[in-house]
Image (tube, rainbow, N blue to C red; front, side):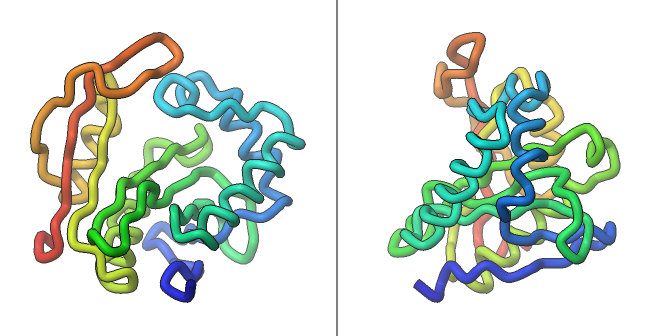
Length: 181
C-alpha cells in the first residue's frame, strides 16, 4: 500500500499538511462543535474520545486505500487548524473526491486554496490519478470560491445530492483533470 504513503507537505503560508495523530483530538472535537463546519460536513465528533476513534479510522482507511487525510497544521507537529484529503479514491479508475474544513483560526487567509492546490498536485503526481472532484452545497459560496481559485472547473449542479443536518442540498460539481494545472 505504498501508493498512499502519507508525506508531510509544506504550504506557502508556512503551514503544513501532515498525518493526523491522537494529540489532534481536541482540534477534531472542536471542529465537530463548530457551527460553520457542522453545517457543511458530516462530522458527528464532539468529544476527544470520539475524535481519537475517528483519527484511528482515518489511518485505517488510508491503509485500505479508501481515503487519505491530512491535518492542516503549524509546522513540526503543531496545532491542527483544518483537515483536507481525498475520499472515494479509485486508484484503478483514476479518480477521487476532495474533502476539507477549516477552523476559525485558519479562515480568511487563503489556506484552503493553498492546501487544495497542494493535495491536487500530490494526487496527480504521486497517485497517478486523472480526475479530481470537488462537490459542495450550492448554498456554500466559500467552497465555490475555493474550487475556482484552486483551478477546478464548474461542471454543473447535482440536484438534492447530499444530506446535511438541515436537509437535502443541491450540490455544485467542480473537477480538475490531469493537464489542467
